[in-house]
Image (cartoon, rainbow, N blue to C red):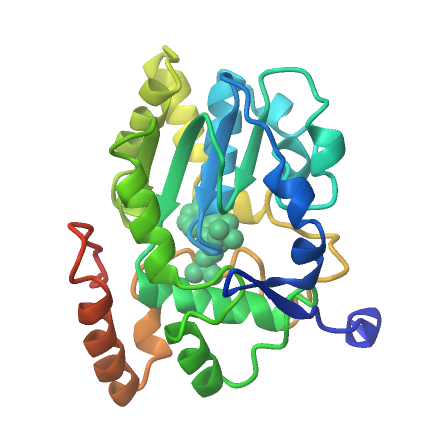
Length: 277
Ligand code: A3P
């Protein structure tokens, strides 16, 4: 913790009006030049929507449920973040490549979305414990910044709506965190079909078990331990893994303001979310 407290907070900058980590901005040309191959698979999401969960599911599917194989290295190495320093080197890797991204361009994409209220709460706690990102300030301050779309990676509304629109013209499997919680087996089956795999029922059950919250929380290859930028005393990476945690965080006034804003932002989309547990 002493080492963590000495680290500076990450700085933000902007590209086309979207707030990003300064480091991401400095790499933007390289990121933008990324060329997708036909057999690339991208896992896209707004931060804290269930990216790691989806990544682990995909890795286990690609390895036919071989748990040992999926524990070969931390998830961030098995499926690197496209918008990070390693992307130049990564693009030289042989096919097929799997990675996570927040923006595209893409060949074949699995997009995972989470209801805005829980997404915001999860993002706030993550920003508190993650020195790579700017200091989130108090919850009340963060609430306003998030609603204004000024957090890192911009507006939640634009992100989920844009990918929802794109799915009509691109091969995108759009899944929801809430559905994964409710019926993980059904949702994992969807991913298996999307990837064109044919796995036995017992393999599917094994994947459901190994990607459950408790198992992933205790798996050092998925729980982001040993990252010096993260302070586990403030919050674990695998924090709660539930729906409706926003009720413990939002004040009544915040909920009212949020609902009003939400209605305006979501008036032009058919996309709907489940927020009530
Ligand atoms: P909470 O902070 O609400 O607990 P990401 O991987 O996109 O950063 O998302 C992290 C969020 O997904 C965290 O939410 C984390 O606990 C949750 N999560 C990760 N794996 C999960 C799983 N197997 N089941 C349920 N939630 C999971």
